[in-house]
Amino acid sequence: MTKLRFSRKQLCIPYAVFLILFVIAPLFVIVYYAFTNGEGRFSFGNFADFFTSTNTLGTLFYSFGLAIVTTSVCLLIAYPTAYVLARSDLKKKYVLLMLFILPMWINFTLRITALKEILSVLEGNISRYPFLNSVIGMTYDFLPFMLLPLYTSLQKMDKSLLEAASDLGANRLTVFLRVTLPLSVPGIISGVTMVLLPSMTNYVVLDMLYNSTYIMGSLIGSYFSAYDWHNGSMISLVLLVIIFIVTLVTNRFSDKDANTSRGTVL
Image (tube, one colour):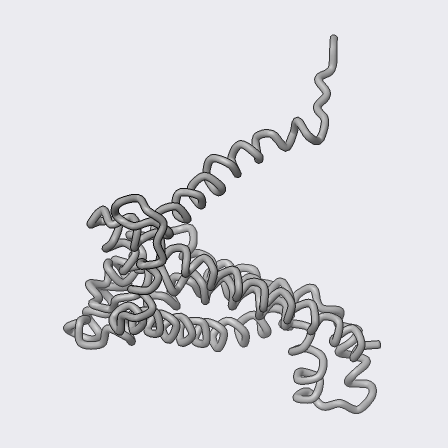
């Protein structure tokens, strides 16, 4: 019986086809519409209108503010939780970790609807606090994406380094600031990247909470709903550039911090 053998190039064909059809081709379409006007001619008018309009710039800065607050809240909740779970000797700590991840396995519509009902009971009229409810909804949706990288980073940390720092006379606060925190920076950066960027565009959560908050995702959705492909593609391209810059900066910062941490440990 003849055995089937595939080369590496042949095994890469399905991925290459997927990449071309669902990544490269849509990107070309977005670039085309972003740099053309309604007549199909090359134009920077879409970008000029975006960066000179107070409404669109206000939406951009508001989206940044909402994303930064959401990321900060997720980090403040996730880091202590991940630290306690990673450092504790609890036999059921994996069960506790599972409770934080459990919302990811529940239907998105179901859990956001449940959150809306809880906020309705607590606030009465959930439309009175749009920004607060936006942060609560985003935090509830993205908290597991911050918790998992932090927990993995803290769990895999070499405990002998912590013991060595303690043997040298460092107290718990010094050990945390000089050893634990620097070594967990890659997990922090990974979590921040996974929360900051999607929270700028995930307007579905806000819509399901009957929220009047308008973010970049809402703006893109409104343009495409009105069949304005040019402005919708232009804003999508702007966000793509922002995502690329943030990812590039965080990767460089992560590599620099990793080298610094190795030098500190050595």
